[in-house]
Image (tube, rainbow, N blue to C red; front, side):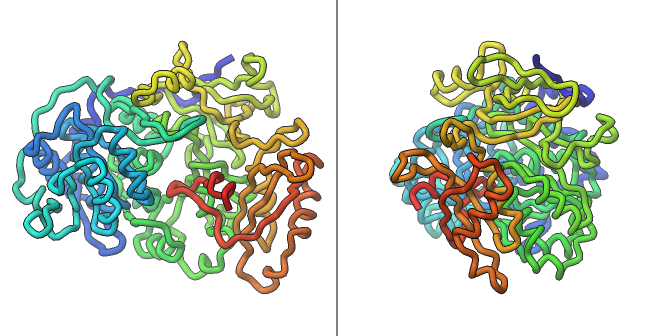
Length: 539
């Protein structure tokens, strides 16, 4: 049977995202610092933020961009990104956020598929942006370079060209339930990247669903290193933190020293990370050099966090560590534990091995993939494993121009089939086991890579690890292969393939043993921290 959220119902907004976030900005909050560019120290107040968003929207309207148009946004994190993003939505246009690591070919593919008529970028990414724009016949005047020299110098409007005229934001009308706010791209449960259609209602609903659980307040300082172009950073950081009137300390990309320095210097109270950052926080000696006592909570998402690793981070930093779960198609958060673990709202504490409970106004199911039968929450312990299904106001409208993929993902009852294997306990707390498509099948047994990765990361000489299935040349069987990054410490370089396999074999069932090992310099990961297993398959 389905199981509902244990959290109190929330009011789901019916307005557009701009009005929801900024429509009730009080004078007391207007002069609070909203955005801090960590690299330069530049600060933007909430009052300044709204003025610049309106001006950006006015500049787009002046160039004929509005409801029905799509604007590409290709940039690392910055205050300028936040202004441009919300300016696009304020104009009535739709933002398709583009991975800052994309090649020109990747950018052009997304611009073409989304039918974007404008591309907003920065100087560091202009070479690939310009090449992509040329490939899709975008004129230089339609490629905005926020930190560039300006239209008079190279034909590309910059931030000053757009904001200095102070043009009023247009009066736009659209249905927030149906109008697309953003078009991020995701491979979903299978296949090539597809445009995920998220409405204004999807985004406002998800902020409303997670705000009571995050406990963020106006006096909090949130370290924003997760990319805003990814739905995790977009909703959990950029939108939810702004709604709380908190201060966002923005890093353009992750580096451990900068991450630690900003927490110490800016006295950040919360950080949102992916599991690879947790590995560094648990193991790297650099952590000991910084005063991180201001941190009250760390939330990990984008991939499963091992319980022992999460506990190691919590013990070392002396703060709460929780997990959340979601996907682009869910705007993205569907399951989360509050920063107090769930004591106040649920009356119990979510184990660190779980990703918490279903968010408010939503229900979940665990479904047996072979029989299609629903797996009930148990009276005690954990349920059997099945695919996680979810239904709520944050479920996407569908995939852009791909009805068949939409039908495969969202059923007639409105449940989105996540493609992730999960278990549930008696309180409705969900535990992600692994991705369906990433499971290794060895002699008929299912082997979850995440489980083996957690074992590998517990080895003191292993800094990072990833596991994929590969074909054994002799047997033709799919077998688990581990890619290992050795810890930069004395003696670690002597770690052998045999030693790694023996270490894992001593802790798992025989069919789960690692049977091949490769030592590499770094595990390839997406900007959101997910392991790029496809890259390992070609390594």
